[in-house]
Amino acid sequence: MREHGAVGGRMLEIGCGAGDISLLVAPEGVFGEIHGVDISETAIAWAREKAEGSQVPMDFQVGNMVDLRDFATASFDAVVAFACL
Image 1 (tube, one colour):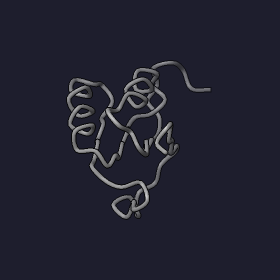
Image 2 (image 1 turned 60 degrees about the horizontal axis):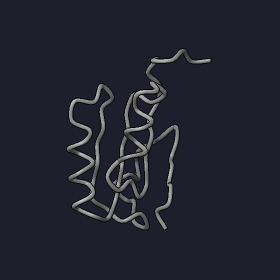
Image 3 (image 1 turned 135 degrees about the vertical axis):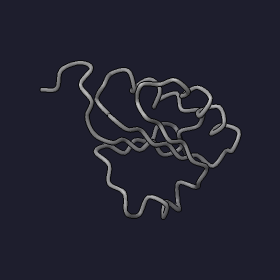
Image 4 (image 1 turned 90 degrees about the horizontal axis):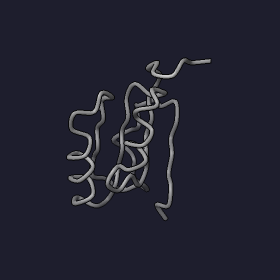
């Protein structure tokens, strides 16, 4: 079992919006790297702004969840999607 605060794997949030779920998960220390993708440029700008200063590296990108070819060679320990449809 991983201790609280231990840095783990990589997470991708599909339909991340303003990054609220990613930002909620980050302090738990489960993931050492968090990525998010959303179709809204405005939401991604908010997510990037909110993530500034986070101790967990976060990368938010504008993109469509039905076309994730930017992540075709990436691997993740968790892929999440909450209320994105």
